[in-house]
Image (cartoon, rainbow, N blue to C red; front, side):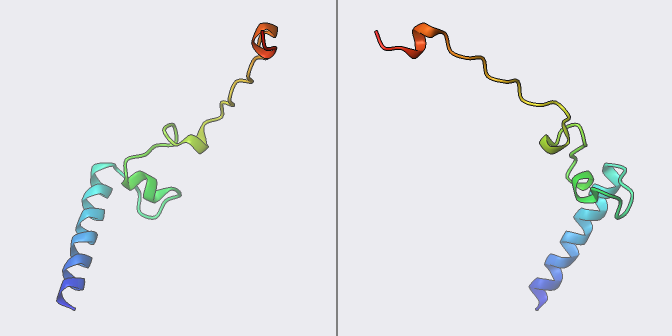
Length: 65
């Protein structure tokens, strides 16, 4: 029981320090991402760019010689 309490206190302390370090607002949207230092620009799901379409292979590459 004592170990659980110690772990809980350590986790709360880390969350408070990270919250202050990254200037997060408490329980904002994407609060966990803010705590871990991620921003909207670094998350893959947030990028608006799409993957470029693959170019078709040259004819010499598609037929065996």
